[in-house]
Amino acid sequence: MPRAGGALDLVVTGGTVVAPTGRVVADVGVASGRIAAIAEPATLRGAEEVDARGLWVLPGAVDAHFHVRAPAHPHREDWTSATCAAAAGGITTLLEMPISSPAAYTGAVVRARRELGERQAVVDFGLFAAPGTLERRDITSSVEEGAVAFKVFLHAAPPERLDEFTGICVTDSRTLYEAFRLVGTTGLGITAHCEDQGVLDAVGAAYRGDVGPSAHPRLRPVEAEVVAVAQALAMSEATGTPVHVAHITSAAAVALVHSARRRGVRATMETCPHYLEFTAAAMEQHGPFAKVNPPLRGDNDRAALWHAVLDGSITLVASDHAPFTASEKAVGWTDIRPAPSGTPGVEMLLPYMMDRALRGTLTVEHAVALLSKRPARLYGLAPRKGALAPGADADFVLFDPSGTWTVDRARLRTKARECAALWDGFVFAGRIHATYVRGRAVYQDGAVTGAPGWGRFVRPGRTAAVPV
Image 1 (cartoon, rainbow, N blue to C red):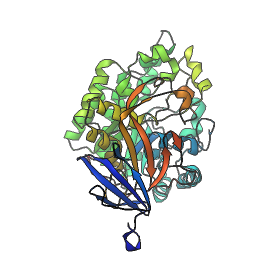
Image 2 (image 1 turned 135 degrees about the vertical axis):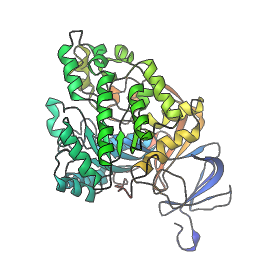
Image 3 (image 1 turned 30 degrees about the vertical axis):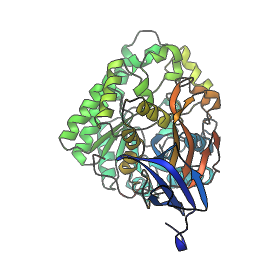
Image 4 (image 1 turned 60 degrees about the vertical axis):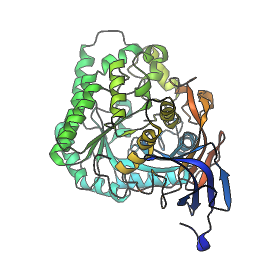
């Protein structure tokens, strides 16, 4: 809030402030890292003034699905490289999944990861934890250390990465039920990666075809997602614990969430830009660099996802930024199965959704809600995050709707830039001019200006009622 005498540290003048409810030309005043006022143009004065005429002022995006890879695999990504990429992509808060070595399944690990992030991060961040050990103290200590939610996979861990998935992979219904029940006692929710291990095992055992890149969608069919979504929804209904279905990919899975919500199940869902833009055909061109789990689907499923975005059924859009090295991915050109799954996407999340808005697929206001308001509310970060309003953190993006941006993967900030083949050469309408975190510019005109250690750890207040 304003300091003594009403002085403002920063005033962003004459920009078009975009909120989920509409747009207005206004000045934005910042004091002590928070928004102090939104006022008529040319009515505020500050120690620093930024001319935003012709630009949109967007709430900073909250990327609710993110993998940093530190501390175990900093060659893939570390907190500084990850958050520099986030800053360039207009992400002011990211929520990191618990996969690393050690996995974040205890309060002690959550605390150690928080401390590492606080030393290295350029933007703000929160942390997920893992509930699958079923040890009450593991779960309660993770909550005490500030976890925003808990994450489970309904398929088994990759055999070569078991230590990274301790407490995360839950493949039997008894353990899954207990995990939901225990998490429910904390007031937090579970985010679920939904692919059923039994279906994957059966399909893999029967498969006799080519094992090159095009096999990936056949080896992880829609049925595996549908079975796992149904099970996660059933556990949520039985225990009352909120469930969020991560990176949903298929019409059938979306329909299951619809049905459960009509019954009163506290269920939400997300998807990602790569599922909204690409289909399984991308495997033929990009091979293992298009390998994601669940896989890219067909045109009908992609159309169903867009329908669910437009009617509000999909709660949020997240990047599922999943960095690996190019050599780790490239083994999949001859046999797709051992290649790790995931694609770097944090720098394309906000640009993609704003591109779709500028091209008329959805409204700008809806895009802002999907990227900012809804993830902040779902994970208990509102009203400090996700909105441009007095009292909120001064997290915002100055966006030029008249510009363009062409992705050159060699110029991306992520260490996994060589793996960004899906987006290389993609031309986005609109361009990020600057990103501010708590009133400080962390990215401006193509350069990261934030310093490691500026990013702060964020704790949840309360989780939102569903829908958000």
